[in-house]
Every structure is written in structure tokens, then in C-alpha cells.
Amino acid sequence: MASDFRLASDRRTAIAKAMRFETAPRIMGIVNATPDSFYEGSRSMDEEAVRRGLSMWDDGATWVDVGGESTRPGAEPVGIELELARVLPVIRGLRAARPSGFISIDTRHAAVAQAAVEAGADMVNDVSGLRNPKMRDVVVNTGCGVCIMHMQGEPGTMQTNPSYNDVVEEVRSSLEEMKQTLSKRGHPLPLILIDPGIGFGKTQAHNIALLNEGRGLVKTEGALLWGVSRKSIVGHLTGQSDPAKRLPGTLGLAAVAHQMNIDIVRVHDVVEHRDLFEAMSLGSAQSKHIE
Image (cartoon, rainbow, N blue to C red; front, side):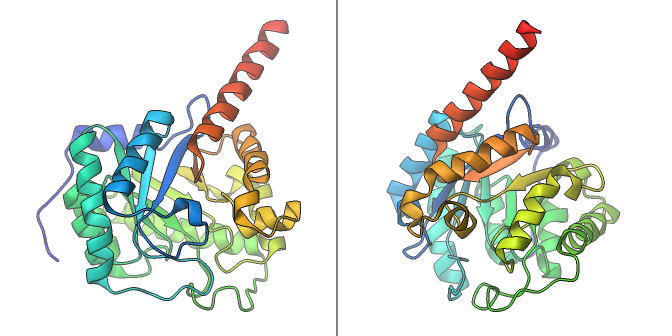
């Protein structure tokens, strides 16, 4: 897996800027190159997945997040070769069609992350929080952006009985510890994004506590991502058991993200989030003008 590949310094500067809240949260569109992700509407493969990613950029997404392994509760792992076969053609297709677009690779595996960055990905989005030292090596050696997500347990069992003494402090400390591990190895803090991992080894009460904490989860310089789109937290809040009916609730949480200056929201529905944020930004500008 060793490689001398490293992103150019000007690209790294652009990545850091694309990870920050501007007038609204940056939108990260989800492309699941899988047959079993929890929301059927997010699944697409091969050329269809490339078209989906391009459409997301056209519709206002800053980022396209490509994943080849479902990490929903109860999900079974897939082999490295299968994951590579799913994601690399999509990343290469996106990069060829849109050289300036920002791509992240959603993976827990260092070999997949390395190959994806070499194929054109700008960020590694690791739901396991860089537990594997080899994943840290990939991030530091390539100089890519990274999203460190908190997950208690593994996807197959994480929702069995999640337990914390103080969920906010434990998640905050865990994420900060990994940030500092990377920083001490020379990885710039502006290239580090953290994600509290809503729904990944958390009860509904845990999820709500973490969202309520907002930017308080960020202890030192860095950015914050929320991934709540169509998840069970929305179902619990709205009474909608079907992910296909959770868009209105998802947009409600996105409005909160806008108010809290969350840097990135990872979503299935780009157009709806773009329209929401444009309306909220207009409303904010009008309020200031009236004052």
C-alpha cells in the first residue's frame, strides 16, 4: 500500500476552504455504490453513480461522497476487492468529468482510501474514526482532507446497547484526541473535519445531546459535519418509520445546522437543501436590512 502520492499544496488549500461554512453549510451529496444502503434512493452503481454525482455538483453540492460498503446498523462487511471495484470507477469517472470537483471516499479501509485518493478523491471519510493506524498513515502521507467520525462498536452490533457516562464529553474527547494525533504528525488542522456519528452507537437521547451541543464539540481549530439525512433520529422525531418519508424532518435539522454554523451537512437530497439554505440566507439578509 506504500505510495509516494501526495496532493498538491494548492489543491490542499482549496480542500480546506471547501470544508468550511461560508454563508451556509457546505452540502455533501451521498453516492452509495452499494445494493444495501439503508435508503434505497441513494443506491447507484457504475455509470449511474457517476451521473448522480455530477448532477449533485450541478445542483449545488460542494462535495460528492462515494461509498462502496454499507455501514447501516446490522450491516455485513464487504471484501476490499469488491469495495474497490465499486468505488474506483465512480471516482475516476467523476474526476475525469469534473477536474475541480471535490470528492470524498467513505471507507473504513486504508487500502481503499489510498487507492481512492490516488484515483482522484480529496478527502477520506472514515466512520471508524481512524482506529486503524494504517488509515492515519494514508491521511498524513497523502495530505488529503479527512473526516473523523465517532462510532461506538462496529456497524453489525453498534446499536445493540450503546452506553456512555457523558456522551458529549466522551465523543468530544475521542474526536479531539484523534485530531491531535494527526496534528502531531504534521497534518494541518484546517484539513480535519469531525463528525459526532449520529446513529452510530448512539441512542436517540445521545443523538439529540450531540446535536444540541453544536459547535461545542469542536475543541480546537477544525470543521464539523452533521450526517443526519433520513436517519432513524429523524424517524423518531417525526414518527416516520420509512426513510423515504423523512425528507421534511431532515430539512428541519438542516435548518438547525444552518443556524448553528455547522460546516458541512451530508445529505441524500441536494436540491432541497440548496433551496432551504438559499431561502434562509435571504431571510437573514432581509432581517439585517430591516434592522
